[in-house]
Amino acid sequence: MNKLPVGAALVLTLLCSPLLGQVAQVRHAPILNGTVEGSVQQMLGETVAINGGAVITKDLLVPGSPSVRLNGNPAYAGTVEGAGATAPRNYQVTLNGSASLRHVVRLTDPLSLPGVMPPQAPSGSVDLTINSAGQAINWSAVRNLTAGGNTGQLTVPAGAYGTFSASGSAGFTLGTAGAIQPSVYQFQELSLFGASQLQVIGPVIVIVANGVTASSSMGVAADPSSLWLEISAGGLTLNGGASFYGYVTAPVGSVTINANSQLVGGVIADRLTVAGNGVLRVVAQQTNNVPPSVLLTAPASGAIFTAPAAFALAAQATDSDGSIARLEFYQGTAKLGEDLTAPYEWPVSNLSAGGYTFKARAIDNQGAATDSVAVSVTVTSPNQPPVVSLTA
Image 1 (cartoon, one colour):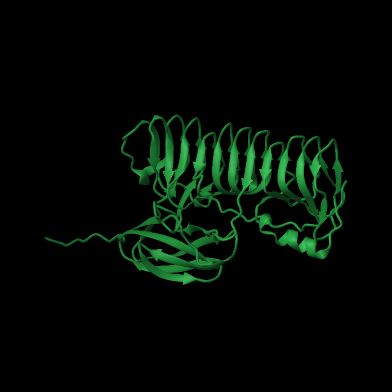
Image 2: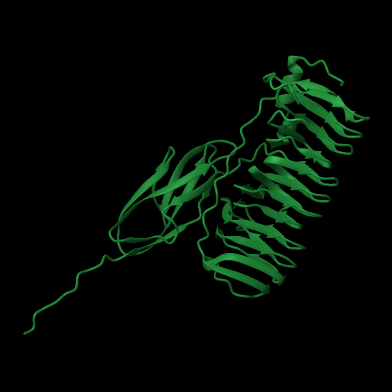
């Protein structure tokens, strides 16, 4: 092990360097056989091996004081000590064969990975299969959608859906061109096979419950920051030749970049695998504020009330790179009020018969705002007693 003598000034320089903004954050020891352009921070004290042929262009940051072992002839610039705790100690970092790594940075205190709220239940009830272009779609009624054949790109409005799958020449286009606020999409599952694509024409937040699988292209190569993928209970798998341009958060799932696939953007995940010929290119987000995520949890979409209706609007919100400043509640386009602290709620009362839509807007500490998917409710007239008159 080649250990560098490092003074306080060098430690400070390394830990504050803009290059360390290019860090993939992973809870468990990563499995690395491909290339990581950037750094990886491992949160748990678990034995990790950088396998022969694997390349990390910058650093591996680990907690505590593991031993570092070199097998073969890896390219390695040495071990750097951070300023964190010395425990845990009883694990090992191994560099095998011709692996390449700049530094192992020990004594790096672990970070808490941000949570991801589960997506809202689908608002529609129709399961649709499309195999040709030009078919009219009532998006408000769609729950699950399978697109294939010569369907082409389907422009999907923001909303809450079930399972979406595309294959062949089919694909999904998300976002609003020229928009400043991100459009929010919520899926139970999302899959792209063959040459199908997920195109993004404006900033979007995609919240998925059970995982994303792709073997094609997702996002915009020139602007990874336009796609933020948040997975509450699953992970992201990129298969042969897939390209993902964006930032993925999967705090309880795995991000897997298989051979000949690439991810350009950022990763926060429970586990990370980069297979041979796979590439993770970590792009630092130093100047762009990550918008918050928000979910209107009550009332349920499609709920029915009796006039004069009264209930509470309730919402959840998170912000991966800051804090929530306030939550605003809206009836249609009219602002009802705002709540500054969690749990975020606002009372609604005395609604007459009719149809209503409500949404929540989360604003973070840097002023970025995100609207929740709108929820529709119906208020019915109260039951009236019959009228009777004695005529004879």
